[in-house]
Length: 186
Image (cartoon, rainbow, N blue to C red; front, side, top):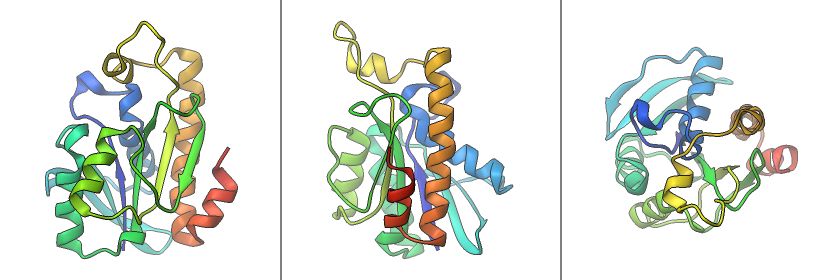
């Protein structure tokens, strides 16, 4: 089994914001593979289905971004999924808008949602897909920036990145993290 967890904040107020590109990627995967049985479980919206012959959970934690680790920990404990089959998809202010960075493991960097996950599951040994949302303008508070929406031009770049992030996740199922990295890191 694979677990694809996109990070974001719940509620219409946060839809299509910079901080919700993880949720957007999960929604894209759900639409592509006709997985629409989302239910609230383990502090998350969870849907299960088959992607490329593998049982897969699509997860959108409902704990707000900075507490994402609570939900991920519950899911990992309940389903007993090996950490190498957990893929976290989230926004990154250190990458230009629309760029992807895939890693097999690593630190949380400056991302509070990832910091929460690492604190709760006590390992860095799981793949992650980071989607670039660009740096905040100097005069803008970071929290306000990540909760803002993209310009029309940026949205086109991000939509392409979301599609590529979904393809990268599927590549991890079919092949490996390393092949996903070689194909989609840009």
